[in-house]
Length: 459
Ligand code: ARG
Image 1 (tube, protein in one colour):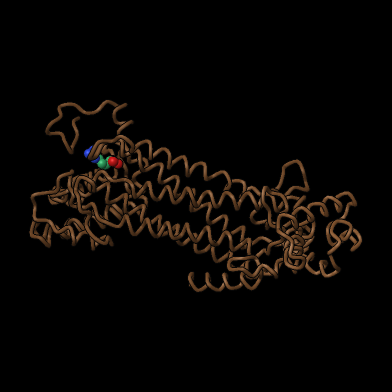
Image 2 (image 1 turned 120 degrees about the horizontal axis):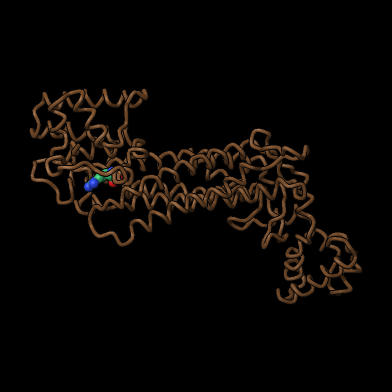
């Protein structure tokens, strides 16, 4: 049998393989609500501009609502022969309302239709990502507030560097996820123009009102160039880009949770609700959620790379290649939302082992920089010389099997005669973090100021 949409031109129906490679209904049925919203806006506009009779518009409106409820209630029979969501909805509409259904596609093409549907879908995901990121930032703010002055080691090269506060470390992630949030908002603002009315590619000779459909669908304006409107997918690429960067942040934090929850670190204890056990080793409590979040950025970035490859080199305007946009974006969006939700749960639930943080903070010569700074400040030594003296003292402490505060004054003066007992005041970790009051520094007073700033911004 020939096709019901373009049967006029065709004598024969498609080969089964053709149908299999061509059909997108298996996945684009996820855009059913967006498709029907777009059609409703289009039909209302066709009525308002006098292109369609009010009675036809009313029949289309009611019919589309019936189709929507059939889909929502799982009573809709999706057909592969009908290719995609657009033709499935229209064919069912025709069964329900008859002849007026055939008028809905006036001044429209599947090209502007699919671009509109997909934009609406991606826009919802940008909003969902925003919600997930806000929830994560709130969970991090709570952790930061609880431990604004808890001392822990700060690392470079994963080697003990200088003492920092737990709150400061949490707030570093707040900054990262805050940028992700602003990237999602930027993407939303930039993508929010309506392709509807671009028709196949060149616009239409019907007196349509693109402003009206744009407004009805929550777009800021109609897209200004019809060729661009049907061939643009950079809204999807931008979402995938923002999602990839967010995935990188999630992955780095997940990696820290894996390290921190190990028996060697014991910085945090993950809740039972967000851990798994071992089938053979009874003692095990594994950070599987963190590991999976660490991995899932691979899928998100994979989608980003895949859609970039699909789009590169496509001539204007629409090519069927672009049907390959959806599965990638669907999977990436699902993956991102699940990762965000799992991270929120883990962060909200985890217990921080303050004592383990403190013990780790004062090992590994973490206050060596404080000692060097003291030599500069009190003895007016050039920093490079102070660095060398401190290094010599660290080596001495290492030989004696102790940390810097346990060296005697005699040890100190053997390396530099000018050192006095006051030096011991700066070798404690509390003193170290409290002294770093520069803007953005780790001192609890600075950390609390940043927490307050973020709470205000998020509220
Ligand atoms: N299923 C198609 C897609 O996802 C809809 C657009 C079809 N347009 C066309 N000219 N064949 O891209």
